[in-house]
Image 1 (cartoon, helix red, strand yellow):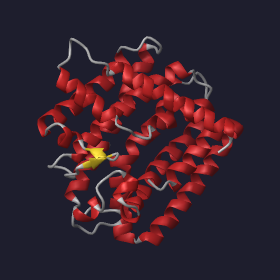
Image 2 (spheres, helix red, strand yellow):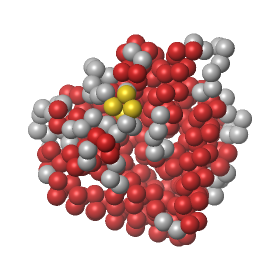
Image 3 (cartoon, helix red, strand yellow):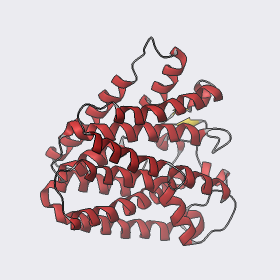
Image 4 (cartoon, helix red, strand yellow):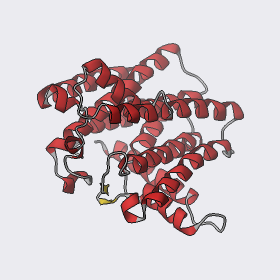
Length: 296
């Protein structure tokens, strides 16, 4: 990573963490325990991958940071909401997240569910209340993000994931599962940027549409590999949780080598897509390589 790219990534990490903390400050209008659980769920670590995708994609299209803050905040709140639900006993039944007790373990199951629900509504409320984007841009963002989170996206993918436990499914079905459960919100992070851009051409839009789906799929396959190759001390999550729950994962069905090979193929595709943006895509290039090659 060049010094310039490092400064850019570090700047965006500080920026989004400050924004998240500010919207989750304790308030006399909210119940203290619920607010504490909400803050805990979002602020106890996290790589902020989706906001970083939004900011670095935004650099490719010369979009003001203040406008990018809106989807960056909303999507990160929604991602955190989904993790709280995923960890519940009725879902993946995990006790560790980011090296800390999961929200239902730290508080209790009911509080965790309510905290996640509140994060979901807050995510859309922050878009509606924004003073830096137009009403048309607000409607566009809400449409993109809600579809990525609903029955045709993240929520539907989690349903398929639960129904697929212990079953042998094919490549097409597994790709659909990953595309919906993980890929949809990552894809929305990429495409939400175009909703805020003043100018772009069809080629840029079509290329980044493909980029968004492929990096989402590669991210999930890498996640599956990390699950079986690294310890919980490194990952910050329960070790072999997918194996324990008989999850349908790429390594479990196709093997580790095939999974690594497919990640390399997807990485090559993604890097080729970014050539259209020349030097403006340097932070996004680094982020893409990191996401697909990371160890935790």
